[in-house]
Every structure is written in structure tokens, then in C-alpha cells.
Image (cartoon, rainbow, N blue to C red; front, side):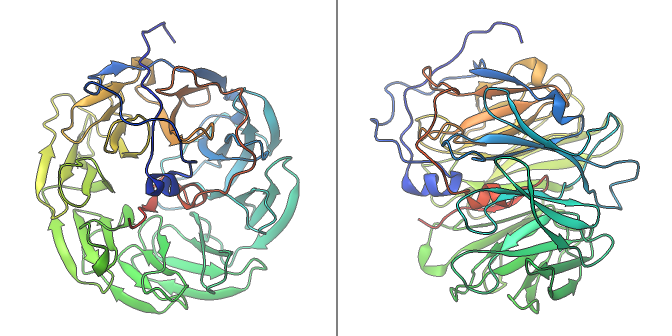
Length: 457
């Protein structure tokens, strides 16, 4: 990585709801910095970590494996040798790294041929509620549960069918204090809910899309499940469904309209972007897209009511292909649509909270191709921060890695390096945090085609 001038903002102050969402601790330092936000500032990493031992084709998970208050990385490498548009991956190897680049442990043998364009069945979660994160991974027709600190095998959960390992979702179907049911699926048609001993609670078949999401929509203490265009009761019966074409690529639960009195809304990205209330009424449809590959709410425009919805439209999957970013308001009215002038259709987009001290969330876009650098955008879709051009094809993660009340962004290249970015000039990856941390839901239910939620304020 070449030397670049590095932007540093003053210490961020996050709202309590933002901390709940990102899993951070609340900073006590003073507020919004004086002066306008930066424009197109080039970021320089505060740390670079060799993750090559994790293998090519691996994806990153974040969590406090050691209990020292900092997040560690787990690189999960999928198996390969087949078309993952039709068949799900298992995990080939797991490699855990700390923020100083030390390999904590490794399970399995990474290969040089792994590739993944789909979900990888892995999660970081304290499944047995003993205060220690476990690493869950579907390997050899079972979910294996490894101790997060040392990689020792603690338990196995048999899978209910040959292809029931597209991804893993952890839900609370009993209404207990601790979610401990595992929900697995095949590529597009079936969902199974399991107890930790492998007992199948139910099977559901339908247009279940990619990754689902769980949320207690009716306030009875038990999670409903949203998979594809179906909303399921905790017992697996259908509560209601959506009459939509194609399949769901993104699911999000949030108070998009900004009115807590009417509950949360459900955002679904498929051929278009669609917002429903918890009773199944469609509130709006934004269909000026070909394929709404990513759709996510955020407070990108604090000057507007409610939350905005950002996303990525796959316009043309051909060669060279084309995609574009978009942003709509809380009522589905278009605020921005990118008129991209260079080819490329591999972009990924999501929301980032708490990266700097200025009001509003940031819109992250990466893997853009066509020479476009990854960047963080404000609600006017002006690029506030850009990442070095060498990271054009990097994957990204974000979270409060250092337990310092702000979010860091991690960019990592395939089988190569991880780069940590912060707006704090004094950020130090070697400095321990404040003891063990509870894994936030956003990070214990994470995958390539992620779902998520934004807490109701």
C-alpha cells in the first residue's frame, strides 16, 4: 500500500441506538466537530494484517473471541468444485486472527481453488450462553461448534438434509432469554429450524430467497422468521406472504417511517425494493431497478423524516455489465440514481454507522470495478471518504473493533491482506478494550446476502 495522506476526525459520539445496532460502547467524549465534513478524503490504514493463511475465497467474520475487548477475525473458506448458483457451500477451513496478525488457531486445510459467490454457512455466537463466543460452521453434513478462543470442537449438530447448509441463522423460537435455535436452508426452496441437539422443529418450503432474518414482530417474545417472500410464525406456519416476482436478495427490519407507534417495517430487496408493515400490507414499491441486489435503511439524511433506503441495482449481468447505486426516502421516492459511465456489475453496498462524528449514517460501496475506488458516501451521495485504488476488488466489514465507541472499517483482499481504517488519529489495534463483549445480532447473523435490523428509537 502506497503512502497517502490520512484523514482523522475527532472522537465520535454515538447515540445509544447506534451502539445497540453496531455492538459498540458509548463514548463520553464531546460532540460533533467544528466545520464541514470532509470531501473525498483519502484514508490510510491504521494497521495491515497478513491473512493469507486463511486461504483464497475466504470471507471474514468479526467477534471478540478472546474476551480482551477487541474483535478478532475469523476467515471461513468455503469448499468448491461446483456451481454455487445451484448448490450450497460447506466450510473447508476456519482460521482465527487477532488484530496484530497472530494466528490464534486453524481448523481444516485451506485450498488454493476455493471461490464463493454465495453464502458461507458460518457464524460467531455464544450458543451455550457461557460468556465465550463459539464459531459455528457447517462441515461434513453437520454444524460444528468450536470454542472461539482455541478452536477446540465443543459440539456437533446433525443437519436434516443433504443440502441444508446454505447459511445459518440463530433465532429465538421459544421466547427464552437466550436465542439458541439454528435455522438452516438449502439454496432457494426449503428452510429447517433445529434445536441444538439436531431435533427438527419444522420444515418450510417456498420461495425462500437467500439469507433470512428473525424478529419478534408481534411482541410475544418469540421470533417470527422472514425468508424470501414469506413471513413465518415461530412454529413454521406461514403468517403472510408477499406476491412478488423473482427472489429476495436482502431483508431488513426497521422503523423506516420514523413512527414507533405503528411498529417496525420490513424492507425486501428483489427485482425492486418493497416496504411492508408487520401485518403484511405493502406500503410502497420502488421498481425503477432491474434487480435490487442490496437494499438497506439508514439515517443518511438527518434533515428528512424517517430513514432512507439505499441500494445497489444489478442492471446488466452481461460482459462487461452494469450496475448502479440508488437512494430513496422513507416513502420510497427517489432521491438519487447513479448514472454510471464505466462498466461493471459486481458492486456491493451497505450502511455504516458511527465511522465519524458527523450526523447521519454513511453509504459504503465497494467492488465497483471499472477503476472506481471503494468509498463512503453521505446522504447527498457525495463521497466523504475514499479507499486506496488497490482495494478496488476488496471485500469490506465494519464494527467497533477496538471497543472505543466508534466503528472501524476493514478492507480485505482475496487470500492476502486486511486493512483497518479509522477516523481516530490515536486508534491503536494493540490496545486492549474493556473486557469481554456481547456479540451484536448484526454480527452473529451475518452472511454474504445479509439481512439485518435497525433498533426502534
